[in-house]
Amino acid sequence: MKRVRLLWNIIRATGADGVFTGFLLVLAGGSLMLARFEPGINNLGDALWFLFVSFTTIGFGDIVPVTMPGRLITVVVSLYGILVVALGTGVIVGYYSEILRARANTSLDELISELEQLPELSREDLLALAERIRRRHILR
Image (cartoon, rainbow, N blue to C red; front, side, top):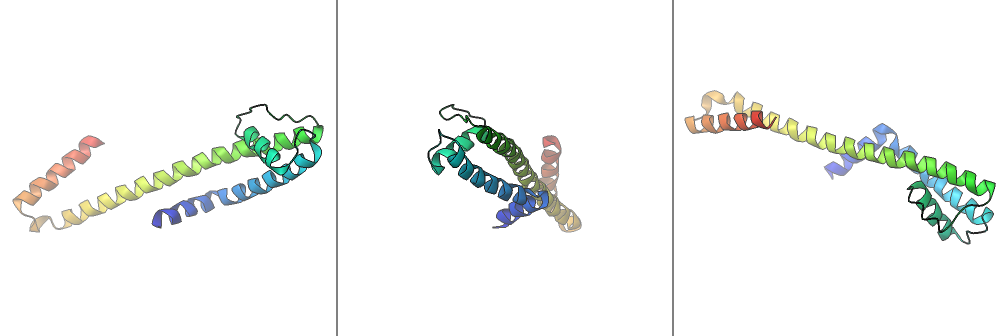
């Protein structure tokens, strides 16, 4: 649950929630208009399929817009879709960066806690702590 909250905070902080919502609205509106204007698109499902293939840049070519409104709708949805895919990648990278930062802070907090109790540690505990610090330093 903590990770879901972190992901949602990153999505809100980057403004991606508005971009994603806007994209869904543009996709729905574009699909409705394509189904109306394009002779090769017979229903809403075909329109959604065509726009998905377009904005993901797969481009199978099974459906091709032939009218000017259809081409303009395709361009707008495709450009917006590319932006959304790129933004989604950035959000995912930000999410994992935050998780790694939180893990590093937790490990550092544990180390500081042990160092604060240094006078109370036994010789074996001191050797184990020294080994952990050496391994941490080598891994970096």
